[in-house]
Image (cartoon, rainbow, N blue to C red; front, top):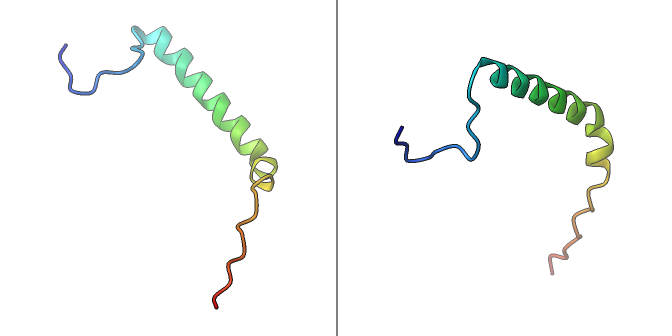
Length: 51
């Protein structure tokens, strides 16, 4: 199959598609659960003077 933007990895079959979707949901749940900790580590923006 020709494609101008082929996937880096191609899931073949319904079983692999289901497993990948389950993994993505797990990753999304983990990201959401740890979001407060993740964003709390942002380095503050430097204060710039307006002289």
